Amino acid sequence: MRIVEPISAEVVLDDFTAIKQALMNPDLSRTFDKRSYDDGNVREGVVSIMHGQAHRDRRRLENTQFRPDILKLYERDLFPPIVDVMVGEAAAAGEADLFSLGESLAIVLAAKRAGFDLELEDKQAREDMVAFVDEFSQASAIVDANDPDAIRAAVRRAHIGFHDQFGTPSINRRVELLAQFDRGDIDEDALPHDILTSLLRHRHEPGLGLEDDHVVIREAGTYLQGGTHTSSQTLINAIDLLFDVREERADFWERTKSDLAFAQRVMHETLRLRPTTPKAKRRAEAATTVGAVEIPEGALVILDLHAANRDPELFGSDAADFNPDREVPSRNPLWGLSFGAGPHICPGRKVAGGLQQGSAADLPDEHLFGLVAQMIQSVVQHDPLRHPTKPQAKDDRTERFTRWRAYWTVFNS
Image (cartoon, rainbow, N blue to C red):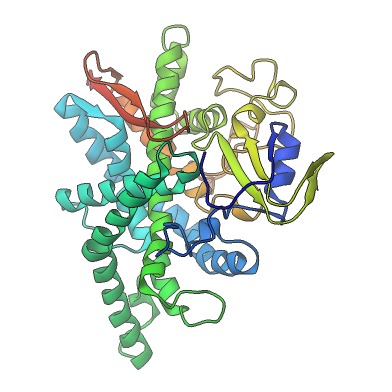
């Protein structure tokens, strides 16, 4: 692995409790490359790698877009018809690449939440945005890239195209609406409720670093990428795991079809076994300790989420097995540490994953199942099989072994 700043040591943590402490440790940062964007740091200035007060200020502003009322609107009203139509079209065609299908499903609402204008009916624009997001996802995993310089070059090209096609037009429309609002020509309800609008409304506040349109677009693009690529990867991994046990546990398949609560448990179990980031990484900004482990300044800290999520003391003697009926005796989440913890916990975790289920059979009316559970259920309802001639291929651009580049299926209905 190549990063810009030299490392003083490498420390690996694979204990669940220690990793959770590390994720909450203020001396451990996600910033590996301190250069400017012009000098080659394609993630410079975005919330996902910021640290300290600047990160807290950005998150406080952006978290307003993840309120319960907004999440319910997406899950119960906006997303179901999109899933029904798009998965139905794929099934009618007889075959589909679940990677492309998953990204196409997720990107419509991710774009709406992030603030990039995209019409569902415009298939070409949707495909263009998906292609840009795929490049951006490589930047988010650049510390694990097999060829980081190639990734940097590709992401730079993608940002230029994305800015021209989606970013600048979306900013210009919102700037005009905000001007109308300031003049009193329109009221608050006429403004888009999305991250891009929030950033533009507060861009001149000190400490936010949002004066540059390119930074604003990259910042909102972080949520576009995060809400699209990881959802598609989780969809594929869930279907892949269900395929693996379909003969001996046919009930898992049938319950996923008919019970959205069980489909959610499939998704949570999938995330536990196959986190989209199997090994998170942090950099020690100062000498610190995690549990009994001393970490020197400048050290690279590798957090093995894949191993921690399979701890038999926390998840049972069958912790390495796929079992959506798993009961976790502690208060730890069913998905383990796959959404992270601490200041960089995934802001969209309730959008994608919904709320933790308790042991009670009856869930409250306000329970959120998450958009990925709906995606999984809809695909399973059309009875796919692994495609006999087209590939199910892992992503060879990264060391993150739970990521796919293609996953072709055929449909029976």
